[in-house]
Length: 203
Image (cartoon, rainbow, N blue to C red; front, top):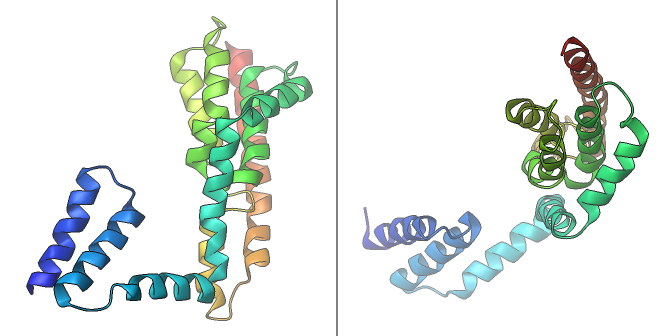
């Protein structure tokens, strides 16, 4: 193992230990590698630019994350929750039904289960814990289960990546692959809503 490779690994590990985003750790380790090898550091910017230009579909991934962070930082999550509460708040299951519908709406904008759980999921848990009929375990289970709709209902980050990779083999397009997740998302949504209704009925 050469000294440049050792420096690359050490810089990446150090960045992760300092809780630096993995992408930044990779860039920093690449720059350190080029410096030790005595090569032009400008190659990093060139490779990043070429990668984004040649795979512009991948730009959807950071833009999805960026949009989800904006919505979570603002009042969009609360407004979506209030809207869904008006629609299904009176159905048996109450806030559990609201959370499932919120996940359906939000997943179409974020494409990420983590963003779904961290945004509308927290709003729903706070509202559910204010009522005695909802336990912490039930509230957490509903939020986690409904957040999995994020990668299923299009547009979805994993489906965009899968469509990009398989599209190079001539098998799938982005629109075709994302469209395939819609029936699954509707089925999961219906199953979760029915389960929450029956659970509250039994309680």
